[in-house]
Image (cartoon, rainbow, N blue to C red; front, side, top):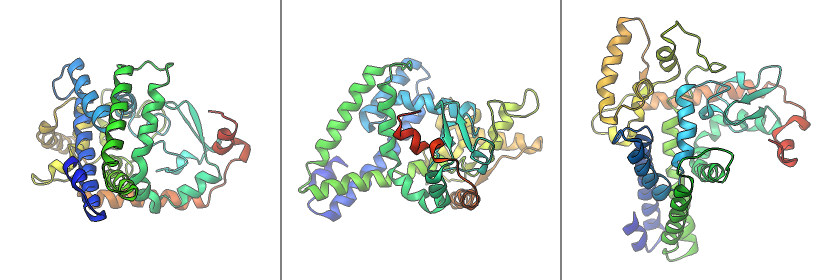
Length: 332
């Protein structure tokens, strides 16, 4: 991608360079995912060092921010009140239970704030099935902001804070310097937008494994004693079918159920464990969901559409209780 960017002479070659850099951002994120789960060396220190290299230094995203959010997601997958990976109001809401309650919204135990179903949320959620792909194309920019917000918040204990800040400054300087080597400002902007928009495929890959699955409230999943964790992961996650020629493109995220049950298992062992788990589930009458990628995308869009239609018929909270009012008054 560096070579293509440095040798680009027109908008066509700039777009190609942006596409290749987007592929790099997607693939390096999979390595970051592996190392943040201590799945490469199985040594916490060295995996953290690899994480800083491939995360903030190579792609501008804080490993500490990702681990804080992602570890919570693994413990309380698809909990309306606890899982930050499905708490995206006012932009997305995968279940009407996010707002159809006495409070007119949901309290997030992770973000420590209340997400109100206000007029802005109603409008965006009502069209979320149309906005899904465009928003995913710009989602990466938000991750940069979230990374810096965590690292600059000294009230939250953060591992290797200053290492990560230095690494992220390095990436920002490198990325801007690389983009500015293009012949014109228009080509520079094109490279930035194309690379980041197409890198949004990563966010699609992450969300389709959970968005279409059922949700629950609270930190405890209602299941048989001793089986809660297994049943929770089977209930809230699904795999995407893949073969030897496209496994690389999914980066291990296609084996989401197996990964959630054994999060530290190295990526190359996940398909083996998937087969074992499928046999186990069949024996005990449990459902291990695995669908082709197009079906997973279709289910996700259908889930968003269903919630969108529910939002159109729902009442909003008073303006003085809305997230917009909170922002105007620097609340939350």
